Image 1 (cartoon, rainbow, N blue to C red):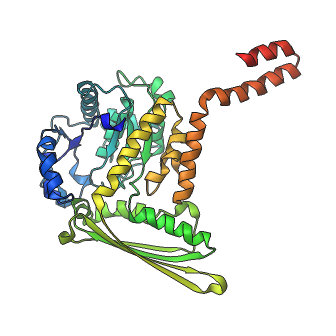
Image 2: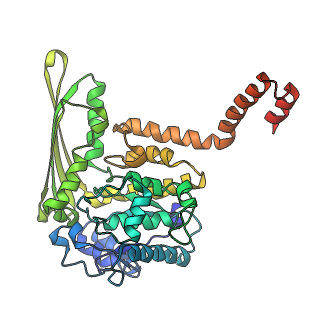
Image 3: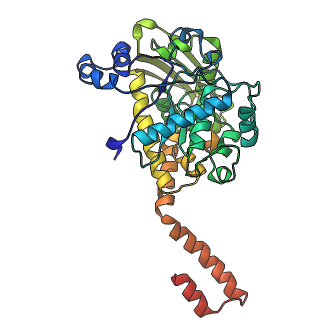
Amino acid sequence: DAGKAAIGGWDVRPTALGDALYESRVLDYDLVRQVRESMNAMPIMKGVYDASFLGETQHPTATHIVTETPTFGAKVEHLRNDIRTFIRDNEVDGHTTVIWSASVERPANVNFVSAESLLGAIDNNDECDISPSMLYAVAAALEGCSFVNGGSQNTLSPAMSELFETSYRQDLKLYEKVSTKPAYLLGTDFKAGQTKFKTAAVEYIRSLGLKPRVIASSNHLGNNDMLNLTSKKTVEAKMRVKSNIFGPWDEDELDHQVRVMYTKFMLDEKRDVVEYTSLGFLHCPHTMLTYTRCMDSVLCVPLMVDAAIWCDYFARMDAQSSTVARATAYLFKVPEGAATGVDPGFFRQMQELEQALQYVTSGPSLRDKNEVKALVDKGMAAGIITADQASSLLAL
């Protein structure tokens, strides 16, 4: 029952949640009026912060931050304690999912190829480019919580994926009280509005037998996330994701151009325009134009709910990491980690989800019986067991 979910989190800004909701002008005033007081009562944990990873526009308001833990290792332990405290105080008896919904970080200039090298760098406080989102992800893994990268930064890596494998954490001695519960690493960047329609539109164009050649898109709005993207170092992370949404299709002749603009007056009301130009029979051009208006922040909330519910469900079913990553690929602009290479088409991604659900709900018993039967048949053929013994084994 998602209505019984406990919700909490961190923020580098001290603004109370209800006041932040009022200031953002996202929802109707009457609704904000009704929930403002109760939301203001919700505690906000101090966030782990590194100014070098955010645009300069974010620096003046980042005052609600962890300052007493200067090393990477100490910050991870601080976050782990926050997670344990949240679970204890809210009497959480299900799965916990940590979702990065903060401003986009610049890309981290580091490439860890193993969990050992990642954890070693954190433990030794090496002078390397470890982002706050990486520290949140590591803390989540060590506590048996899933981590969802809702931003565009390169938090996911082979090293991080390995850390989220239960088998790796079972033998991990570097940290105390490491959880071995199922936990999943998902991302990258929520696919909520323009991009979700864009992949569905191109899927439709391809199904008509047309060949997409140019996709020119622009969007503008004036919320804080877009303000953060006025910095060149952070917009690079966003453009990496937005321009790579069709990657697995290997459309070498597709010219996909994306522009984003900060327009303060628009606040959270996003406007986007996309023109699709394709070639049809006898190379005749086909052009389609779309225009969308929406509240940008509202679009992502259902995806966060989906991510948390799916992580809880799959954890209860003890599903494999690769299964969960592929099943939830529809939530992200560029599925990474174990979901790398999943078809970007929305309908194909729905098939991935359906197949995963069929796989886990068929029960281990059905899959195991097929494997056991094959093994029993080999035993009979080799004369190791008799037909009666085979029947008895299959009846167990």
